[in-house]
Image 1 (cartoon, one colour):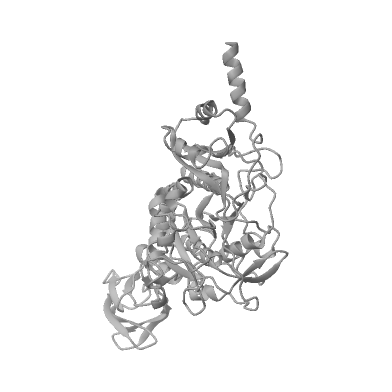
Image 2 (cartoon, one colour):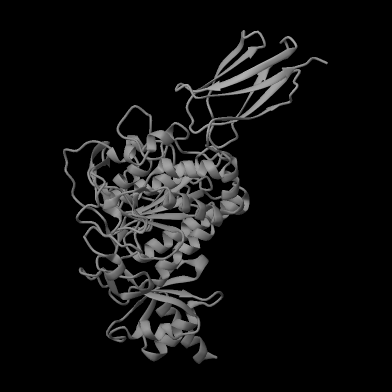
Length: 546
């Protein structure tokens, strides 16, 4: 018994003293942390027995660093490379029955690229058709009142920027600064998200993350600064720099959205998308990052998509690799950087398999710290145009879409991805560089949502007038090829005008209007529906008072 207790104490000492081995910096060329492994274990397996076997082979060589994502049994281990030379530990772990996936930890780079500092216009918003969508919805809430949230993982933010006022997510389950984990999610006072670099709720300020956040969701129509793609979206903010921190942030997002789905919106957060304006510094395929890459399907299962920008160099990522844009998940949408001339920027990655589309990036304009604004570009600017578009689509006035987002979150996320893919503007300059051969068009995607939600477009026609004969209220069902104003006029049998009104067809619902005929004389009438171009349709009806 004494010998067993001694061994157990010896094991605990290694388990909970992660700093015995001096941490190694990430390799400057690859970003790999040569003494850290991220391990995902099968359900119900614990790291203790695994660590005991490891340290029985090479005593004092492997230590438990932290839980990366408890929900998915993912852990970070630190080890002594001298005891496990080469990739010996990685290969040994891959053979263990309780290990589902294992990979090295990496430091990521944020996909920054200098831009022309004198170009102060948000040209990309008009290019993707955002103003035409803003006529219908500006973001913030679904048709059923769910508050839309986007998670941004980046290098830091400025929570005090005036153009983010009101758009930073507030964790309703947490009482600020009381030192208690009120919502029992293992993070104390996590009011805006979390700073994984410092392990705290204190924000790190950095212009890259702030510029990304501004393109997604700077406050719109507030008379100051710039506008995000989605004017009123809530931004859940995470400071990350290493792969293990990215995995932890993704697990946090999954937990929040899963709680929201299961509680019918009473708990958690309605996160619809995450933004990935980051990647590894050297070419890497997704299958070499199984823990990280596996998170995109897990997020998709609860209804979360990811907009990801590819590398800022002219590289075919199908051949050379890139992370995360080579991940084949149905819940990641990948973009390259396009210019104001609708061409792929010279220093931007491409791939007819891996890169879905282009999106405006070069010479964009966004937020800078201390209430300033400035130029921003590269694929880091392209990705948030797409991520903001995802959020804006969820705010369209389609009750069926909003209901499905809670009842069938995975299928709804797939649907949103499909309309974005199918709605691109085809561009000859992108044929050889992307899977769709096109550039993001938010307006086209909205029209596809409209069609799915019951809105239609077709030749001008009066489809039905009922009841006919009518005594009180006449209902008119009609079709139009567009959503501009039409004029409805009614004449009696003597040719006298008795009714005239402008009719605007509505998206996301059937085209119907009503006419009160309760005070009209009995007899025959005819309805004319006409547009400004002179196209018209005529339909007769009878008024009879019983």
